[in-house]
Length: 100
Image (tube, rainbow, N blue to C red; front, side, top):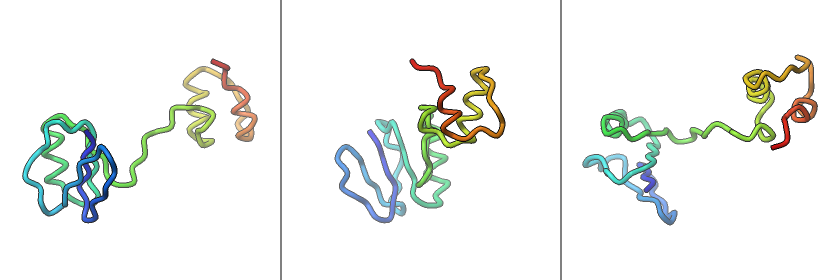
C-alpha cells in the first residue's frame, strides 16, 4: 500500500492519505511512503521500520535508455562498455542502444 503524508489529502484509489500534523506511528503494511513536507520524525520512523520514504517531487530514475536524458544515457552507455563520440547528439546516442 502507498501512504502519502500531506497537508492536502487526495482521493487516489489504493492510496492511504494522512495529514502531516497527525502522525500517530508507522503503517506497517506500507510498501511506499511519500512525505510532502519537512517532517524528519515521519521519515525517521519509517526508515527505522525498513520502509523507504520519498519526498514529494522525487522521481524514480529512468531505466529505459531510450527515454533517458543525455547525461544519464551517456552514463548508461559507458556502464555497458559502448563507445560513443563525446559530441554525439541524443538521437545518435540512442541509435547505439542494442535492440533487446
